[in-house]
Amino acid sequence: GKKTKKVTNNAMLESTSVSDFWGRRWNQLVHGALKGGVFKPLRKHNFSKEISATATFLASGLIHEYVLAVMCHSYGSGDDYFHHEKHYYGVHLAFFLYNGILIVLEYAFIGTVLHKKISELSLPSPVLTCMVIGSALPIAHWFTEEYVRHHIYDGLKVGCPMIVTINY
Image (cartoon, rainbow, N blue to C red; front, side, top):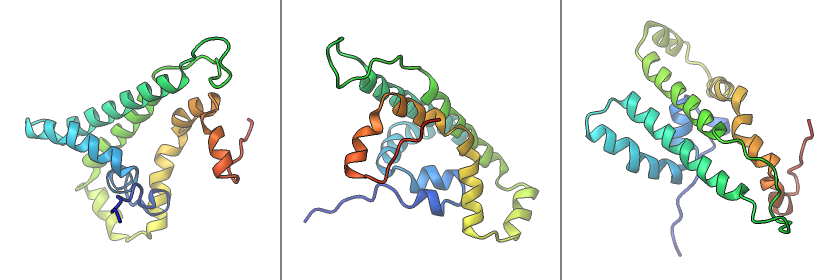
């Protein structure tokens, strides 16, 4: 048989930091491509890890914007497969830049007196995970809203019948 790569590693339930979420647990395929294609080359050219991380999240945002634009492009008035709603550009870019800023803030926080004091508390992993998810949750809709508006998740309902749309 063929060996497959684990794409996610329980990011929503076991992340202990923002960099753990994005770097070791969430979408390892995209992470590997962005790390090898953006982060490492910038570090090789002596850019700081903060600049390199921000540029990596910028690239991720641009890739997601492109993918969403292609998926939401309408191909004429008679095509029922594509829903003809306006696509709002920049929302995914803002989502990923926000998360890049969280990474930079984490870099700045590590090694501070406050970080050492919190580390001494030995907080349980579920508490750390709630803190990590809570840092991005307020803007999570920036990522998902366009997919919901354009009915991109609708196909998942067939294979995953427990997924339901909540109208708000």
